[in-house]
Length: 219
Image: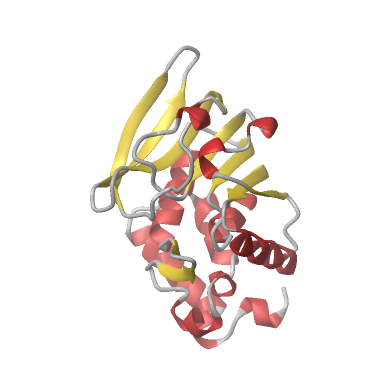
């Protein structure tokens, strides 16, 4: 990896190692998830002025009223998605900076990601190109619709919070598949794990979270 991608000082590999150790202490256990976070340069997914804070366990602004989720939440959501087994095809709703997408791309066969804010999507694409990531497919679209033409998906990860789980996304979940999604009004959101069975959906509440709202036309 090029030196400017590896980082120096506060953006160095040592900072990523420190972050991984902190995530372990906070309860993240999946070694594949921790390895993906350890190798992914989070500092290239934020504005250069914020790069020195990239490996703090905190959310950071990325413009357009959106945020880069704190690393613990990225790890927790990814770990919950993977707990059901290997994932060949994953849908991400809300590309944002592209950091969560890059983590998923290290762990799944193909990642389909949708983002309604085109400048964010284009910026994320440039970052994937810099990192040499080739197993991500991008689309500018309303997240409530997902990407039905490429479904069903073994995993769906949603990075913004609707008031309730969209039926349109449930329909794109494969039998045995898992969806991790924040749900609820700001200040009262919960991270939800949805597992699709042969004839129903099982719902599990994981923990309290805080995400920007999922904006678009709910169907």
